[in-house]
Length: 471
Image 1 (cartoon, rainbow, N blue to C red):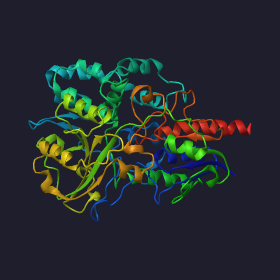
Image 2 (image 1 turned 60 degrees about the vertical axis):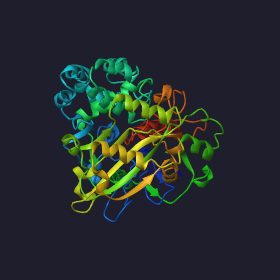
Image 3 (image 1 turned 180 degrees about the vertical axis):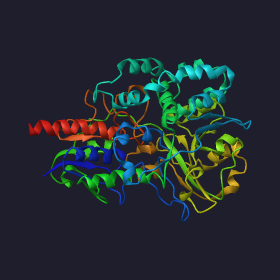
Image 4 (image 1 turned 90 degrees about the vertical axis):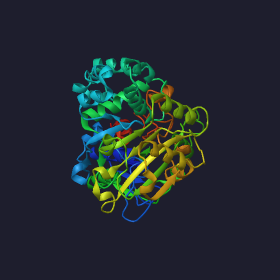
C-alpha cells in the first residue's frame, strides 16, 4: 500500500508529492492528461518552433515561493530569466509607469507627487520580505508566524480595499499601475484585502523580479517531476480518475483538483456547494514576426505589460466581467512577452506573445478584436506583426484544465472572505470530511499562482496524519 496518492500533476500536486517523498513516504501521482503541468505547461500552439505557455508565463510568486526556494529545482533544469523590467504599464501618450527591481526607479516613474508615498508604502516591508512571504503564504494555521508584528502591520495596510490604499496617490500613473496589480487575480478593486494583493505583487518584484522560466513554464513542472522521481516517487499520465476506487490503495489521497471535482470523485455530496468560482478569461497566444511595437520604450524591455489606460477604465472592465455579466468594451489586459529575455521560445528574429482579458464565467464569445483594438492603442501596428494566433475562451480553457471551471484560471473567486478562507470556512482547509482525503489545489490558501505553496501546506496536513497513524 502506498502512503499517499496525488491526483493532478500541476505545480501544487507535484509540490505536495515532493514534500511527502522528501520525508520518506511512498508517493504516486496520477494525471488525467497525457503530459504533466496543469497551469505550468509549454506547447507549440501556433506554428512550429513557437513555444507558448497556455496559462502562466511570468512567475513573481514562483521565484519568491518559500516552497520552491527550499527545493533544488535548478539542479533539475529550472532557470529563471529576468527581463530588464519586471513590468511596465504604458499610457496612450507614449509614456509608462514601471514596476522595477529598484524601488527608486519605480517611484520615479509615478511622478514627483507620488514617489514619496510609494516608497513609504513598500520600504518598511522589503527588509523582512522573505519572512513576510512565508508567513503570508503559510496561513492559516499551517505554521506559526515567524514575525507576527510585521504580518499584523501588513494586514493593517492590505486588508482594506485597494481603493483605500490608492488614496495615498494623487496621480493616475500610480493608481493605474496598482489597479492593474490587483486585477491579476480578477478581483474588483473595492473588494476586501485587495490592497494586500497589489502590495504582494509589488514587493515580489522588488525582492526577486517577475521572471520567466527558460524554455517555458513547463520547465517548472518538469523540474518538480524529475526531483520527485529521484526521491522514489512515480508519475502516471493519461489516467483519468472518476472515483476513489480508480486509484490504488493508499493511506492518504491528495487532490490537486477543483472542490467540485473532488466532491464528485470522493463522494462528498454537497460539501463544497458554497464555493464560488470567479469570472473567466479570454486568452490569445501569438506568433509574431518581431517585437511588439510598443510606443512606450519601457514596455519594450518589460517581461509583463499591463494594458489599461486608467484606474477607472480598469475598474469598469473588472465590473463588466465579474458583476454585470458582459465582456468589457475596453478589456484590462495582462500581456507577457517571454522572447524579450528568452530567444529559445521562437525562431530567430521571431517572438511569442501572450495576452488575456477578463470575461464572464463560461462566456462563449470571441474577444480577439477587442483585445487587439486595445493593443493597437499602445502598440500601433501590432496586427501587422501577427503571423498566427491561438485563441482560448472559457470553454476551451476549462476543456484544457478541469480546474478552470467556467474559464476561471484562479480556480475560485478571489473575493470576500474567500480570498483568505478557501475552499470553506475551516481551521483545516486542506482536510475534508473523509479522513484520508485532502485537497491541495489553488482553491486552498494561499490561492492562485504557480508557487506550490498550496501543495506544500497541504502536505504538512497529510504527513501529520500519516505520522499519527504510525505512532
